Each structure stands twice: as structure tokens, then as C-alpha cells.
Image 1: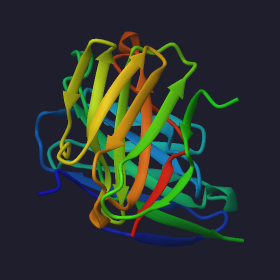
Image 2: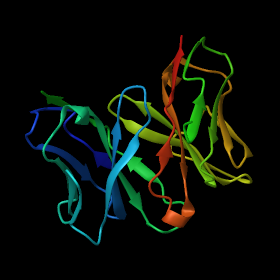
Image 3: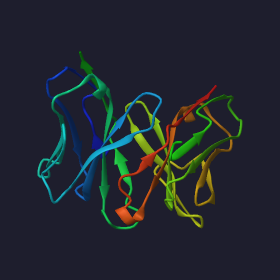
Length: 115
Length: 114
């Protein structure tokens, strides 16, 4: 059973509009969450993260929101640009700052930003 | 040059063959990981290593083995490849001084087993 789920396999938005990517998790021990971005023929690259002690983290056009009671996080991209077209993976970790905390990944959402 | 380098980038082979995927890194990180990616399933952990003498199984280690030859090198072997091991494989590194987050990935090896 997948502990981290991204229920939308794909998302298409117009350039300049907001992109919202969603992620749900089931393990209440997860306390650190990350978003990775992946272009074709490249490895995932880290985008933004959030600790469970926060409910929002912002970095330029990218904002991650965490709702612990709902076990839900979302990534907002505003404004969306064609270069944002990629697959986005949500990942979660339990025991941040403890040795060996592993990442559990969602299945990914393919974002397409149309010019 | 890439910080995490995987070789080969693509490989096609036949069922029953032995295959080795190699990973080298210049980040100086002690911790290294092997993942596989399958459509809709995201990345799943195969093996991880905290240092040269420490190897641990991940979520899906059956059918795989690893070797940590040096701090900078971590290889993944399929002793007798089978078609359901066809996938995209990623190596990653992390720094325990940053809580092992984020992990840094290579560009992957696309493996097809016929």
C-alpha cells in the first residue's frame, strides 16, 4: 500500500496561471516533506521542502503548503512557465535529523504548461 | 561534470544475464542509495549504504545486490536479470550533516531486459 500518493497523474495549465500539485500521505510518522522535479533523461532535482512544524514554505514562485490534520500537502507554482513542464514527485521522510531517515516517494504528476 | 554519475545510461540485455550498474560521486557524501522508478509507482529504494562498511536493504532488494567499493563508488548488480526488472534506476547521495536531506540524484540508467 502506497504511503505517499499523488492522485493526479497529469496536469495541464496555461502559462502565467497557477499550478497546484497535490500529495496525500498516510503515515503519521512522516515529519519532513520534499518536492522533486524531473525532466526527461535527467535525475530528480530537489525543489522545495517543508518540516512538519510549519504549514507553509515559500521560495520564489514555489510555495508548499502542509495540512497535517488532513495528511495533505500541495505545491503551488505562480506564475507557471513553460520551463516548469516536468514530472513532480512528492516525497516524505520520518525522523528528520535522525540517522538514516529514508524517503518515500509518490507516483509523480506530469505538469504541462502551455504557452 | 555531474556530481553523481551513472554508467551506463542505457542498457538492453537478455533474461538471465548478469548486469552491473555503476555510480560514482564527487560530492564527498558518505551516504549513497539505489532506487528504481516504475511508471505510477515513483521511486522505490533498493539498497542504501551509510559508509563503505555499511550496506542495508531497502524496500525492494530481492534480486539485487550492491557493492560499496569506496566512499565515492556504489554499484548495483542484477545476478540473473528478469523482465520485471526493466525500469529506470537512480543512484543518489546525501550528507548526514544536513539530516540526509535533500538527496542528490544521478541522471539514471534505463535498463531493458528482454
